Length: 139
Image (tube, rainbow, N blue to C red; front, side, top):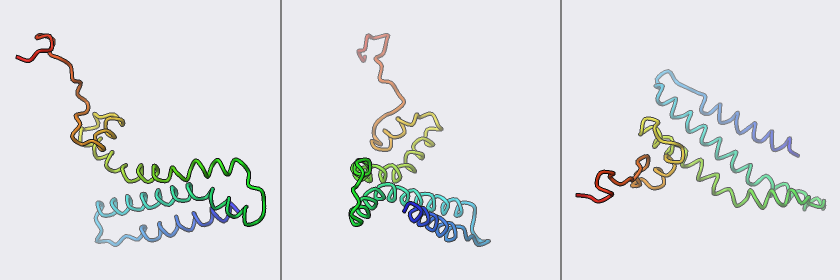
C-alpha cells in the first residue's frame, strides 16, 4: 500500500520536473531561478499535504477493509492532521524569513528573522540598554 503512495509521489515529482525543467533559450538565469523556486514550493506543499493526510487515508482504507486500526496510526493521524496549518505557514513564510535575514546582511539570527517577518515594526538585533552615564535618565 505504501508503494502506491510512493509511486504517486514519484509521478508528481517527475511531472513537476518535466513542467519546470523545460527551458527556452530566451529565459534568463533569474527567470530560471524563479521557476525553480516555484517548483520547490509546489513540491513542499505536496509533501506537506501527503504527510498530513496519508495517515487518515490509511485509517480509512483499514476501516473499509474491516481490519482493526493500530493505535499508532490513530495517534499519527491525530497529531499530523492539525499540523497541516503549521506546515503551510512554514512553507509560505520561508521566502519572507530568508528575505528578512538577507536584508540585514546575514547579521540576524533565525529567531530574529522570524520575529522581523511576523512583526515588521519590531526592532530586532538592538538591545535596549539605558545610557550608563546618566543612570538611565534622558537629558
